[in-house]
Image (tube, rainbow, N blue to C red):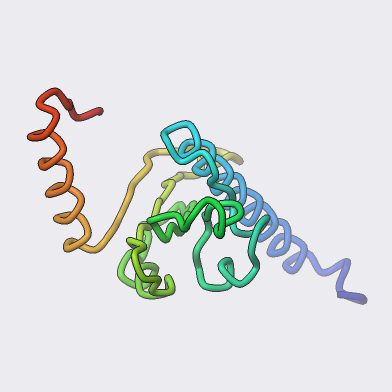
Length: 150
């Protein structure tokens, strides 16, 4: 924005905005790695793979979906120092057949000049949660030895 370089208020706003965007992108990459390490080997950020999916408020997807299939979760990653507005965020994620909507929230708080992580949360619609635990219980019954990870 030419002519506004020396406007202090604008500088701080832009600096904070850049930091927030960088923190959000890092959280997306961190979650993609967590998912790859836990049985989803093709997960990448949608920013790197498909701008349309990114515009649909879906932050993670599989590479080469024609070959690897759709990720069964429509994930939106959020890094916030406030409580996430879960109903709003879930409603913004585009509905996709066969994909469960999930918001993965990294809560932070400001300590001095830095933001420190205070928690990680997953939020989804209750019906989807019931579907997940029902499927887990079926798998436990079939295999007899599954133990919940904490």
